Length: 255
Image (cartoon, rainbow, N blue to C red):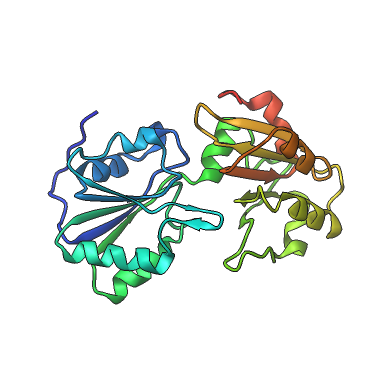
């Protein structure tokens, strides 16, 4: 597919671009165009191979992936790399899985660009929560089951899990946990400790929106063991709430 623009991309500029949750068809048209125009593509490990196929064949590709405890580039070095590349008068696309501003550290990167006077733009992407929930048939809100939805991360900057458990352990809402596989037993135990029933529905999804999508549905007491028995591997998304029970009726993509 060929993408064209009505104006030339500006050299010496950084474009933070959301690559979506995996399926290349979920890219925005703007994201696809910017990827095809980039001189340099700095990408994360969550960006799917199908999305990477849209890259300019002449572009320099720089892997900057982050897994738990394994960062190809420390964040501060990555921030400064974007500055350096832009100062070389290059069109730089910083390509992130999902949306740059939802657990993607996009804010930190843009702050560094601003501090160094580097022009930038941010192109949003479909975040994992909305994309994956749609593909596995779990509505994040529902008039009967959930009038609110909360996104949290399963581990914090120092590696600990210290969330607003009392605020999360409420009925009539959906809690979506990014990067929650390793801490799943603690997450489930804390939600029970702070008031949710042991049989409160919960699901975990591996590699959602891709052909490798797998979904396990249980409850707060059973999900950690079910995930272990199913050998679930990152990247995963955890969805807690009564809406998880709708997966068996509404799932359409498989897995």
